[in-house]
Image (cartoon, rainbow, N blue to C red):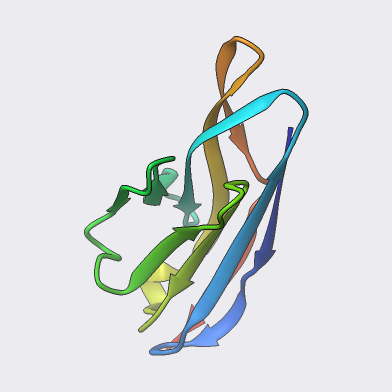
Length: 118
C-alpha cells in the first residue's frame, strides 16, 4: 500500500494551498481517509477526515478554512486550505484506515511540509 502526497511548500499568511494524496495497493478496500499534521515539538493531530460515504469532519482550528474532498474512484483525497496562518506550519500526513484482505490497518504517507510565513 502506498500513499503519495503532492503539494505543500511555502506560502504567506492569508494565502492558500492545496494538497493531494494518491493511494494505491492491491486487494485493499480504502475506507476513511484524512490529513494529519505535526508541528515541531508537538504531537501529530487530525486536521480533516472524510469517510467513504462522504461525511467530513474537521479540527476546530481549521474549520471554515479547509475543505477535504475525495475523487470518484475513491483513492485520491485533497485538502484545500485558505487563509493560512503561521500556526498551520507543520508536516502534513495523508492517512487511511482501510482493509487489506481481511485486516484493518492504518497507512500513512511520507509527509509534506507546509510553511506559512507571517
